[in-house]
Amino acid sequence: MSVSDADRLYLGFAFSVAIRQRVVAGFSEVSGLVIETEVETFREGGVNDCERQLAGPTKFPTRLVLKRGMGDLRHLWDWYLGVTQGRIERRDVTIVINDRQGNAGLKWVFREACPVKWTGPELRAASSAIAFEAIDLVHRGVS
Image (cartoon, rainbow, N blue to C red; front, side, top):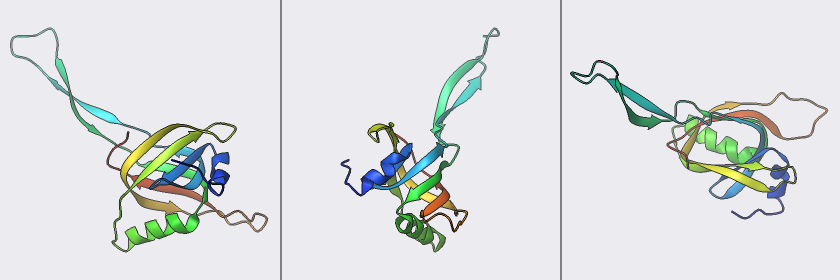
């Protein structure tokens, strides 16, 4: 994923977000990086000193929440607005950890993500930044 001069604005945030290989926003907080494998416990006949535990299906129990962001507000809003009107468009979303110099580091790719909640900004006349508070995404896996 290459970074254009326009995209470098978002690298000043701790986390940048790319959708379809295009950096669209920067965020100060990301939560919901949770992957959980269910454990199935059973007792084996004749074995009374322990229970057997087997790994079951893996799930993603929480939403990916991107907080305190600034970016291409129109791009993210239009995507969410489509969901509210029944046009579910799933997209791969890449979360990148940026270092203090704005260089990209570790990243996660959330497959087939879809926005499910939008939290708007607190509007302040003293600030000209186009910011938003949070966007929640559901997804179908992470790599």
